[in-house]
Length: 290
Image (cartoon, rainbow, N blue to C red; front, side, top):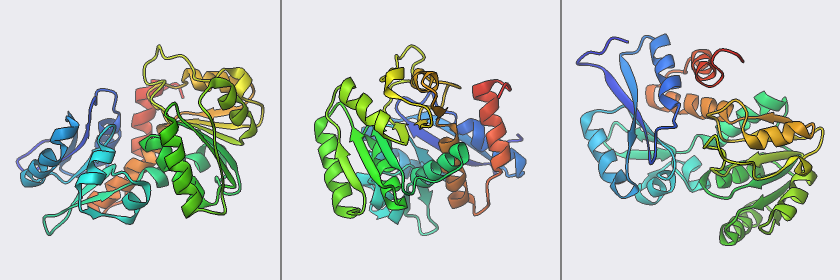
């Protein structure tokens, strides 16, 4: 990568940010396409986000991604929101428009759907899902799955208010989808998990390698699909529990890849080199052994 006085910067913001692999994949695509650009990562406190975004626009950044806990902050603070962001109540991609405005998008939903089809060979349409974790990522997954035609959505979180809010929203917007709020507790979670065809782990548990699985092998069964949004490791403890019971499991690397490719297109007007992005991510996570 040859930096110059014309190099266009892009970035991901979060707090913390050290875990991110977004620079790995985006820089691979920028290099492959021969663009004079670089993608960086910055730790930004939530209460400073809007002023930082304004400064980045003034400095000529080409676009920004957002990760936890900034997605909801941007949703509340930006006035120009794409339909994707309005529907999911969160912003993970900021476009710096030609008129000087900031436009918030959400590419997580589309990235999730593509990753599931890629990992398991079928869509969520007509499926029974159990979504564990109703924060920003879990909410995006649940709303996207319902919009895509999921048959049933069981949702759970340690915070019961989150579950009730999301259940009410799903029931109002998607009456065709049966919504089942699951009470907190591993026994109730395990029962909901065994019933589901696709289990989605969307809590932060598993981001630390020492994190224990939220559910044991008795919560899974052969023939299930299990998707853990955590992407930093080849196999999380949650995935290990699922595989031990005969389920098919995937980490969140595919979702990271495909939401990133959508953001790349929004910023540059070009299709990302998905193959180069995938190779870079797999090298970082699997060390070439995948």
